[in-house]
Length: 146
Image 1 (tube, helix red, strand yellow):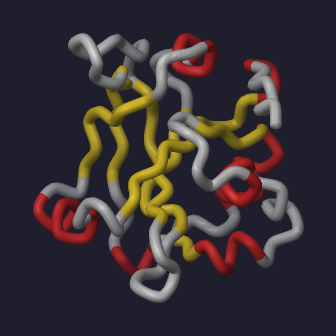
Image 2 (image 1 turned 45 degrees about the horizontal axis):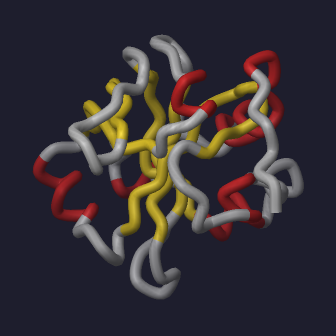
Image 3 (image 1 turned 45 degrees about the vertical axis):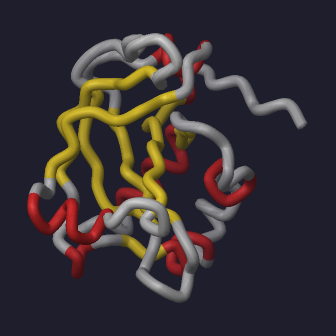
C-alpha cells in the first residue's frame, strides 16, 4: 500500500505517535507535561517539517488500558534532523501535553464523521510523522478545550 503524499497546501498538522504500551507515557507526562522533541522516520515527510507548523501528539496502545487519542497540541520549532548513525531522526517541538481531563479519546474522534478517515486510523502502525489535512485539523480543534 502506498502512503498518501502530504501536500503542504493541505497540511493542517503533523501527528506524532507515542505507544503507551511500550513507554509509560502517563508517568512521563505527569513529571514533565511538555514535549521538546520526538523521533521521526527519515524521508520526504520529515523534510517537510518546518518551524511554526502545528503538531498533534497521539497516544496509542491497547485500548482497554487508557483513553488513547489526542494528548497534546503544539508547534514544530525547527527542521527534523538526523540522529547518530543507526538512530532515528528527531524534530524539535513546543508541544504541551493536555491535562488528563482535556485529552480527546480515540473513540470520540472515531465517531466524528469528519475524522473517520484520519491516517492514524487507517494506518495505525505507520511511522512518525503522520498528518491531518486542513479540514481534519479544523474538525479536531472542535473537540479540544477552549
